[in-house]
Length: 218
Image: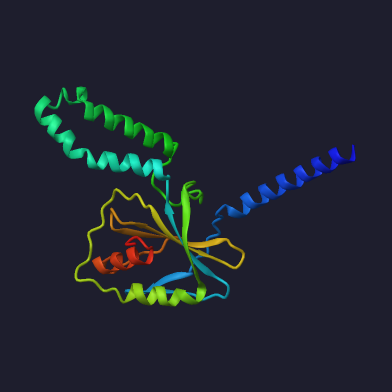
């Protein structure tokens, strides 16, 4: 009887610990307005002790990446099939059927989630995964690198905006107080809470620096 009771109690403790760890692992957004701000074309921040930077990226897993690579690599083959069969009959080709299968598999993995970082209701993307951590002391080094990345030309932002990378700033309690969303495809960055980004700030060198900072080149 005592043994059974001990096992039950251990199970409850383990369940509670698991739930507690799950809650701790969830990203919670506590907007702190005025943390990031621009002075002219220079991005600055209000330094606070105990804050840290974490970088994140949407990651659907290896199976998703494999299907995505197959779709990308087979595009030219699809065009060849379309040239032979014509636009109306290309759906009968094997490559079209394979691409449809890969696409459906990708949608299944995504579970209906689009490419976003933070919703209007301050909910983070469920497939967002941490890639690196930087202590608060490195914040100024990051900003110096970003602000000194003056490019030769300003990039032209597109409006498809589907960010997959983020730089999150956490306070000493682990709450996210500011979020920088980055879309390399659209060459656009957005801040949450929102601040206006000068057009002249978005240059080719800024995005080159951000790619290196996010470890995309390795």
